[in-house]
Length: 146
Image 1: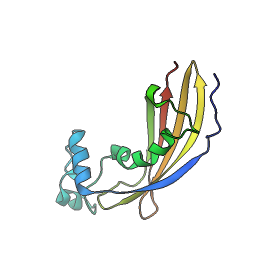
Image 2: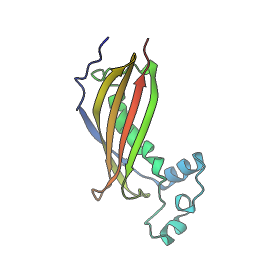
Image 3: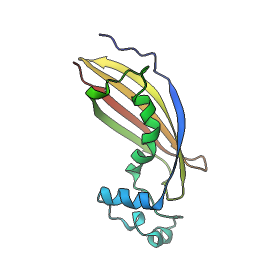
């Protein structure tokens, strides 16, 4: 069965995520990150940051609301019950700190099929309130065959 690629290039409305100090701490604790920049405001300020610094992979927190619509879009056609995580790649910009407002836009970059598996690739572009690109992500999801 051939996969439809009509959704390639489709863009979804951007989402805005207000980065909170406690969310950074909670995330850092959950992933075992002990660097004081993620827990101690004074340490972060002493290092030259305005507030707590988010660990780089915190991007999954602010990107998730923007990725959701594409994953469940009938035009994209993902069979969510058969989907597995295929991979992620990131290009980083300036660090994200508590108090930032991150806007993330997502688009479908490719849909393909190989060996009975379907590959759905999305790109996210996240910018802060100053217009700096803080993260560009490539998210690959694989749908296993029946």
